[in-house]
Length: 506
Image (cartoon, rainbow, N blue to C red; front, top):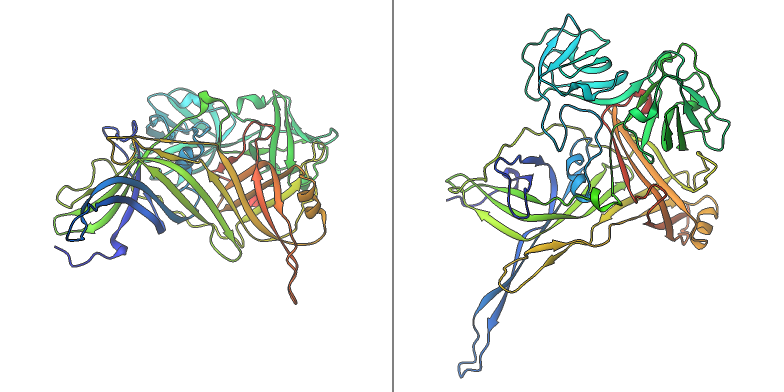
C-alpha cells in the first residue's frame, strides 16, 4: 500500500456513453490536460440519528444523498475542445467531408498511389468535391501530408494535383479532411456594389461546398495567384446567404470592393462548424463518463469516475499577456471508485494529439464588438482594445432526485444561455449609449496560429453595466456585461474550427 499519491501521476480522460450511465462495448477514452480541478467527485450527505436519550449523545447517522459533479480548468488548444463542444452545445458538429468523422466510422486509407497521385480506400472517397482543398495528416511519407487540391473524386480513389509517393500501408491514424476550395482561373469575383458584398462565380456552385449562413470563411491564399489583387477583398468573412453563384457576407475584415479576377485561382478556406441548434430534431444530448486516474495503490492504477455526466457550464477566459484557458463543469448522476486490483474500465485510450496553447498577445487575428448594421459588413468597432473578457455557456443542468435512488436517476437541462463580461479601454460614449439604448450588438473573435484557428461568433447580444472606471494616472476603462440572444440565423453561438488556414490569416 502506498503512503501517499502525488498529483502529478494522476490523469483525466472522458468517454461518451451509449445511454445514460452505460458505456458502449468498446469505449474510446480521450485524454484531457487539466490545469486544476473544481469539486471533482461525489459529495455524500448524511443525517445523524439524535433520539431523546439519557446519555445525551447522537447515534451514527445514515447516508441520504449523493451529489456527483466535477469541473476542471484547461488551456485552449486547436484540438482539445472540438469533440467536447458537441456535448456543451447539444449538437452534432457540422463536418466537411473527411475520412475521420467525429460521429461515424472512419474511411480507412489503404494505399497511396505515387503514379496516379491518388489516395485509395474501399469506398467513401466520393464524398469529396472536385476542386476542394484537403489536408492529409499522419501519413508516413512527408510528401503525402499537407495541403492538396482534389482533381478527381471517385468512391475508391481521391486524385490530387500534387505529387505523391507510394505508401502501401498508411498508418491507422492517417486521414484526409476538407479545409477549403480553389476556384478555376478567373471564375471567382467580388461584387462590392450591393448593400452587402459578395463573391460571384460562373462555374463554381457555392451550394455544393457544405456551407451554411452564419458560418465564417477565409478568402485568399498565401500566393498572389490564389488571392485577390485588392487586399481588402481577402480576409475573414461571415456568410449571410448562399446561392448557386453568389456568396453574400454580412461581416468582413475590411470594406470589400468590386474586383474581377483574371488568371487568379482564388482559394477559400473553411472548416467544421458547431452551433446550438434551434430545431429539436437537430438537438443531441450526449452523456459522458469522466475517468480520473489516481495513481498506483500497489495492485494497479486506481481511479474514480463521474457517471452519466452532462456538460453544464463552460467559460472561456481571456486575460492580457496570458494563455487562453477554459473552465468546464459537468453534472453527473453517480460517482464510482475502482481499486488498482479492479483496474481501469475497458476501452481504448489513444495517444494525446499534442498541440500548443493559444496566447492572448499574438494569436488573435480578429476581435470585434460592434453595433449591428444590416447594410454595413464592416462597421466601426465600439472599442479599439480590451484588457480582458470571458465568454460563457450555461445549460442550466440540474440532477433529478427520487426516492430509492442514491444520486440522481437523470439530469434535466434548461435554457441555453450565452453570456460573459469584458473590460474595454474607453474612447467615446458610443458604447455607454449602446448600453442605455439596449442596442443590438454583435461580437466575434478569431484566434489563429500554426496554420489553424478557431472563430467564436455571438451574433446578437445586449450590453450591461457600462459605468466608466476613472482612476488617477490610469486610462479610463469600461466594464461591460454581455447577454446573448438568438440571432437572425436562429442560433445564439456559432464556433468555426479551421483545421487549416493560410499564413496570411494569422
